Image (tube, rainbow over the protein chains, first blue to last red):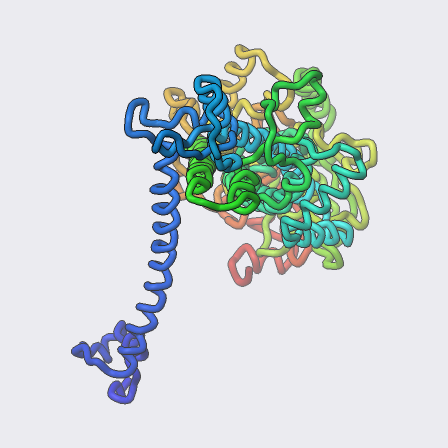
Length: 362
Length: 273
């Protein structure tokens, strides 16, 4: 306490509380203080970097995609882009004017101008819209999340409420951890080998559901188990002591309180399922499909058809077709819609979670 | 439902047959209990009289809560916890026998916990929980039982106007009485209380103690307590435990005025523990 002079700044700070050494120093620009400021700025800049990156991405997609999705005239939203299927774009010069027409428009134009021969450049998928992709992604998300939540919550209940820690359960936990570390392209390959080839489901919705479902399963199991464990043991004991069976206790007095946490985890799951391209490129996604998913001959065909999907569509229009000034429209338009949909899903889950959470507190 | 209706008759028969302590409602016979390899109860033999309050006292870690939780098999929930020898019989039935329905046992042997644990539901739903679990759906029956239980727990007048606020919206003492009401709603025969007043202030404690004295007219009560004055005030019989052994068991007046064992006397006079 006596040799305050010999102490570094840190030590004085920690001793400031005891009355005998209460010495207020004027701030000086010593080495320690400089280091202190430097570390602070490094951490601060690292944090701001995130903001910068996020701002750039959102602005880039927002501006470029906004040009496609929004219009200058009422209704201010490009309805055709959101409600039509992709079409081939035809670009040609006619009477000194540059014409850019979609597939159907081009045919109409030709019938109006019979006998006119034009040198048209065709750009695949760059006209029309992305409606089938939106529908396909929605179907993939709904199916795979239903599957993953069903299996995931069930096994989380088993692991946290029923199982006793033995070698088999430890093995299961290791398996879950390993599953979480498998790259998504490997899931795609696995789904291709098992569901598409071995089960003979071909490239289909159901193969995509299982592949995507298995991919998010570990995340959902882990998060669900944590939310279940966060429910106080006292609620279980209180319920059991009233003569409730184990399953009654879980259903009425544990699961409802764990659900907000499980929903939070499914937000991340939905974003991943909607966003992954690799697992569906061999199992569920078509680059182009003319019929909408509900245009099937038999009910069962619904499950065994491939669909178009937003992430795969972005991949196709960005890498599978020759790039030129006309391709950007669909690329950024799709990305914009995609981002918007994921945000919408996340927002719904957050609202649901807050609603159920506001009723709870212990 | 049928068993709930029949229960009071059954208990009254048993009370009528035995005049005092000898023929106990609960018979604990030479009980050894262990968590894994760690034995916590050694050769405990004890009989608990019906329609009376029996208190378990002793220093921390003496096994009194473990013994209490043996009476409704709450220890089943703990990995590695098991009875290694002896038995617990309630009305002559070994509750650990293979055929015993533990769910039914727990409905008949209610429990109030150390830390009040109302469910994150309304006061009404907290009390109705056990009834709904038992399959009772008739609204009027549930309404009646909720009112009766809250009255028995001396809580009705305080909460009757806000039955639909959360069980967490009332004070700590009220919460604990809510938990007692919840236990009473399923009409148990025996009520186990694990230090029910440890988190309560003196006024709330006095209310719960008064409640215990009233409840013993209808229920068999076993209470674990750290508070010797509490055991003295509201119990008829007191068992003193030390290091997993039952040191002395007798009438409360006898234990507190003239204990036979030196250890009991030392604990009660505050020389250790």
